[in-house]
Amino acid sequence: MAGSDKAFAIEIVTPQKQFFAGEVTSVLAPGQDGLFQVLKNHAPLVAALKGGKVKLELPGSGEKTFTIADGFFEISDNKAILLAEDIS
Image (cartoon, rainbow, N blue to C red; front, top):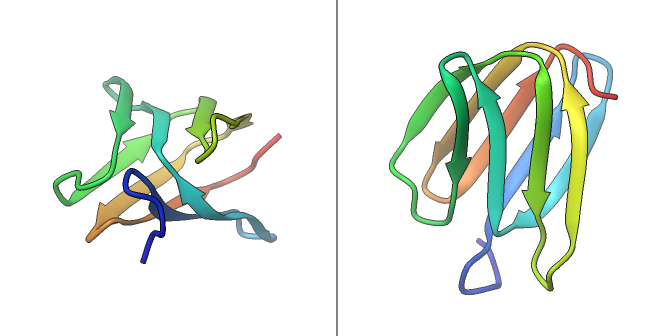
């Protein structure tokens, strides 16, 4: 379970490798119907993703930005997974 009051766990994977695993305070992702943001305690969600930029806000004011190809995002019980065809 996440250690920070505002953080939740996420794992980001492609068919080839695990790209990232850790805690984040926010995820901004390119859904099929537009950008969406997920914070801690978000309702359970499964969303299709289109290619575009993903932005992770890390605990302690850091951030990580990368570009994905199509994929899926799921969150439930403050545990998220982002599955992408490719990440650059």
